[in-house]
Length: 243
Image (cartoon, rainbow, N blue to C red; front, side, top):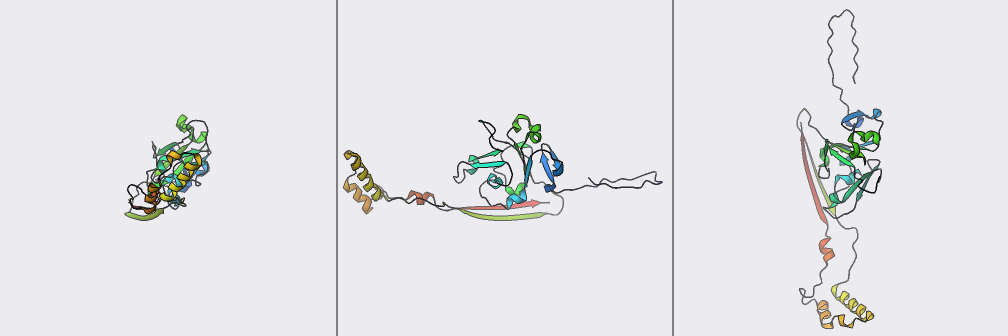
């Protein structure tokens, strides 16, 4: 609020203009269906700006970048398979409150939806409401907390173009080393002999084909671990226009 003092004196007509008072996003907090200044908020609310999220290079979905940046928010990834991260991530605010579903309510610009597929460059701020005083307006849906995502809005002025390019590589930290087919067959025969399973022993002529590798289609010796776990390259290009 901007205060302006005008001396009345002998004036019979006073002209008053309302001036806009712009505040930065960092000075306000989105609570429910309104915006409050930080010093007036009494509920448990945490907020992180979109500019800060873009500086965090966690890879994968946006949820990974929130871990450790919003107090009270716990992000758990149950499946690290490339491409499956977003569907396997669960979030909890202040831990589990019940034996059932503890997923918080997620709102993107007031609409209940997931934000895994939102471009981080479009996010202006993310707030989490953690206690009853902050989530009261949402009723029973806000019992597990609320995550509010606010995207950027258009601005007046000249055209502004932002371009970014990112390249990342995903590879396994460590893979087990397996024996080849010939070594595997030899040890399998040894196990059969120790267990007395004489009818299951593989003939020496068959094992010889695995050793010579003379018929790879009938007696294969293929390294599937090396085939499936090759380094993967991710490329991301983003162009934003405002104004």
